[in-house]
Image (tube, rainbow, N blue to C red):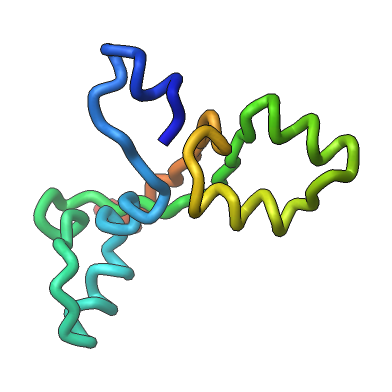
Length: 104
């Protein structure tokens, strides 16, 4: 929810890290066992990913406030949930999980 996203016509769909758990077969299995209605995209598409790393890049305004000691990381995280223009970018690294192949 940053103005950079909203004003760039090439950015057509917002994403958040939690969306990628839909592509995790272990998460899909857990949800099915617990009766959750989450869409098991990992099973549907026969892919298996896990999130290896997530980095939230704060807007320069908020980075400056942290450096000055006006806010701390916890306050920034809370602001990111409740306000726009706090997080400028999210970098998500996915790891592909491949089944062990049996060679004959």
